[in-house]
Image 1 (cartoon, rainbow, N blue to C red):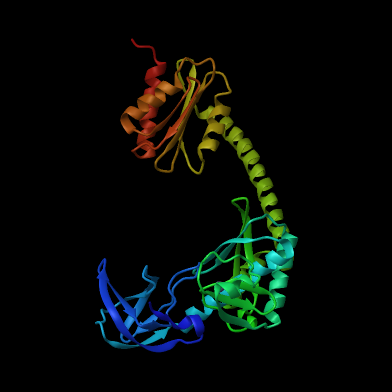
Image 2 (image 1 turned 60 degrees about the vertical axis):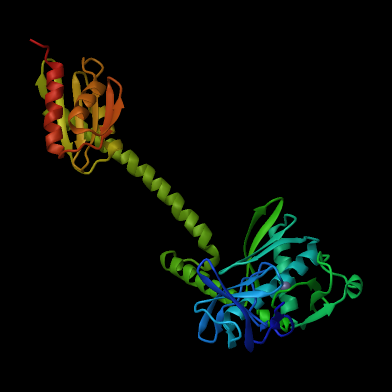
Length: 401
Ligand SMILES: [Zn+2]
């Protein structure tokens, strides 16, 4: 059993100890000390980092026999006296989040009879799971209540209680462990059995802020931040809002409406562009038919065009093929080229077969019907594809001799 200094003195960040056992597992050195201030991952709270002598402590784990294992960067021999240092910033951050969680859970319990059924202290944010679904107003009320307790700066005490003593206490959640309990009390507000590290006074939590929430397993999962994390989060949001306000000249509270308005405007513009594109395609198609080459009774257009996408090419080819006798085969100048082949109902040409013949030489994808086929992804320069396409169409239109 390792003496856990943080049980009674969570403010202790430096200590002296003796290595009682040293081992290697999966190529990593693990040392067990007679006493430690390092907190091992447990109860939703992550481990402490720091150093033991010259070695970095990279992980701390609860071992089955009740001792604590420190994973160290450099092996340390049994019997060595070491000076341990716990990373104070990381520890304090965990204390802020963890104590904030106790207070927040108690606020939900007292205001809404919502029980905490899960807690995870993450690297950036923490989550708290409630057993019921609450509305935004109820969430805000609990958040406000938690901050009131924080700002009243109530003492947070550590006590050890025998099972008999514990039986007389009113815990927020009935402890499930047997034997003596470590009891954390936020004075006059919350009593919990907990092995984690907490601040000495509620005021050190700073602020408790709900970040987001969603329905989860019949209840809710809340993301929350306390203390310095809340300030960091505020800075991120402040910069994001300030960045957005440079583009939209509105006060912060009008941002959602302004973005919605911009999106609606965008949608209208896209529709207008599409309409204009269709009209331009029809106009271009008329000019194109004039340039068509006569093959038999058909007029054939095979052209490479700049700046048109599949939809534009299709609109143009279809508009051209709306006139009797027209075959319009249009390629994009972008590589790999796109192609649309359309023909008027009175022309005996299978557009899909033409595309298939083209694919035999240049590969690519696509397909269609006798009157309209489209494809792309040809492995060849557009001009070469165009010449081949013209040949295929001409051969299909001229009856075999
Ligand atoms: Zn706790």
